[in-house]
Length: 80
Image (tube, rainbow, N blue to C red; front, side):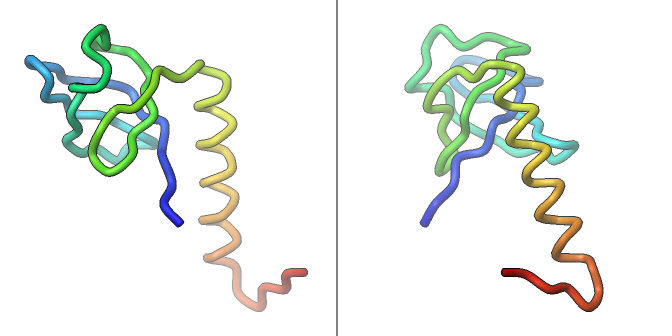
């Protein structure tokens, strides 16, 4: 299963972007979203921005990712 991650466009030149999600930055292409602009929140999948994302939805996803990371780092974890 592959996940798409919401990220903010922090650099943009043509269809080449640098995006940021939770302090992590990587390159992505905005070819599929020609109207995307600097500062937009986009959903990134396989190196491509595939849709625009609402700020609140992005924050919810980032919170879930943080909770998963916290759980992973917890000693003696019990799930289920």
